[in-house]
Length: 254
Image 1 (tube, rainbow, N blue to C red):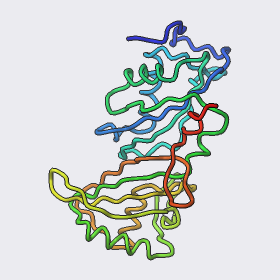
Image 2: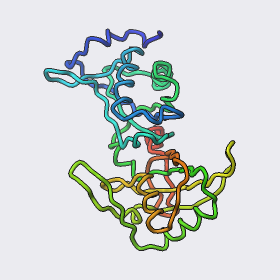
Image 3: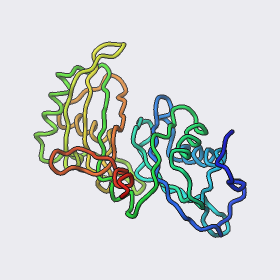
């Protein structure tokens, strides 16, 4: 497999090499690979880095780890067009070349969409919200719209989620900035689609939390398993509640 020219043996991590460049990467989880957990993706990505010969930096210590920083990964089972991570490089590399090599080294369905050279500022600070599309097979748009109306009319919508420290009650209404229902045609017939923009709070409100809120406040009934896809993740526009491109600042090089 083609690797970056002049790259040292990626199987021999050298924590002494300084980080001279940071690359920010947008990747997608598509099709059946949406069931890949964050831990599984991390292992697959590290293998792809080694196969591609990317000159990634390593941490110091008894067990060096590659310099990879993940930001707000989507839940297992959700597809996504907008996942982000950052890697530290021991020598400057062409972003487009790195994109092609990593994409070729990953399985189909885990796809590298974009790579840019990082400018100052934390990537995580730009990930203020997400735009989701949730397909509801077997649900009419009229039923979905009625549930949305009930949800949006509520001042708060409390749901319960099991977390590491036990069961916790969350208000999922306050995090939802936009929510609308529409209809789409699928091979099996009409399907209701929810378009949702969610602000990233702590803890983050996930698509399944929104659906739980729609069941409790709007009477939503699901006949089949919903399919959630994150379409965008980035800075929020306070005016219209839209989600921008978190890598735009990095591309805007004087």
